[in-house]
Image (cartoon, rainbow, N blue to C red):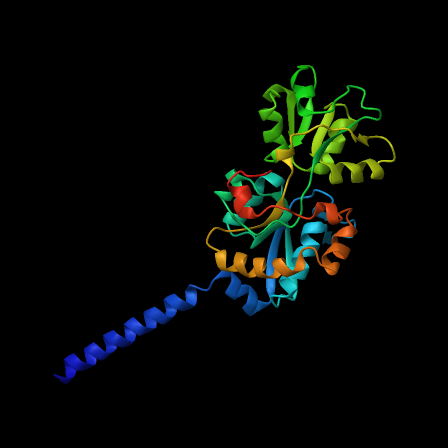
Length: 284
């Protein structure tokens, strides 16, 4: 009898050990971040949302807001991972980083792939052209109706979707990896125009001292207003919820507006839609 009792006790201990080992290995991303005080942020170069400075440091509206938010979660170290725009969501899902902080718009299609926080901004689009807009491009349909025109867009961006929805043919599209490549496409005349956010285009127009210009009279569907948010893996809803709790009291605050004003954002860029509405396709 003692032998069987001992074996039974051993079996119970083994089961308990296995249970504790399983629980230990089931640490969530939020728990790891709070335990280590570190978070990994994925971003793509698209000023003013997120970009690498000449000294190698990473800044921009999204990373700076993320730093403030994660600091409230006890994070003391923010690691950044640079990737091309089209690789952000695959990189997140593959575990290369914990969150995307790169001006990623909330769209119904992306809502099927990631868990978005509540929006942190609202943005409109425009096009960059050579000075004076010589091809008179004031909308996506303007490109669509002239098959000789070429439009540069970032691969995987909503601008690519909007252009195609307006009737722009695949042969008219030049897909590039990031926003600096958009500028080069126009400067080298590989594209007649490049589409991105008005903030991005205005900033580049200023940096290039009149060699390119941002179209101020760009006509676009109001439904194309972009609302960017932080993106998390679908299983990291506890991390998303913790971030949302902080965002609720932070977005629109004096500290938030001061943080984003450096990058050309102001009260007009504050979001007026929820992620639930945007995921359902209710952009207006």
